Image (cartoon, rainbow, N blue to C red; front, top):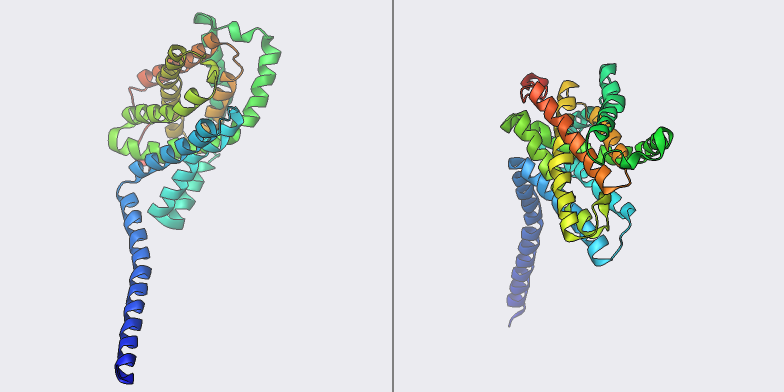
Length: 301
């Protein structure tokens, strides 16, 4: 082979390598754009998929594979709804969209009556349910001071968890579902999906939320938790969210007040009673508002 021929072959190989490299480089942005396009076309599906996939994968590794039963290890998983909401919002609206999302997250300038409802009236109504439902007072033997102290400590400890949950379920999912299905159906969907997301905790953590230890007891507690606690609370929080012009902050306070009160319960009966009391409050709000839950399209969800 002559020197010129070898040079031509070398040049051809170099051009081919350059073309391949260029093709690989250009494929990456194309792939990334394709995924962004899918998320923009289906933001709700993307949000739910990311939330479930990341949360369940984390809990499966921690509890299923590593065999760790501590409830504290569940904490990182409850922040996934907020992270998924931030991720999808950023892909949908960029920095302007994230700024709008953040303003809803920290919107605290609302009428004082909504703070009273979230921090005092709502937990008082849940406590009132213990008086009328069977077994409801069994978790209150320590007296008002003990329950109040436990509630205050739990409120501070659970406030970040409430924020991590509400930023996703109320801040991102609820407004979009309300536009499509209306407030009542949207709240039921959010409540069901929110509750079912906790399934691994019932499976892997012994006696999670006083669920018991047998398969039947755990299944019953999970059904009551989803159908009572999360669906009922979803109705309450949707109403509060809509009436405060989309304040995730107020929804966070109300969510935290309820879960903090639920954690003061030490028996299976009192825990399940609190779930049913929350459902009763949510149904009353749904009925008295005609299923509108304070929703108005001009709120700008």
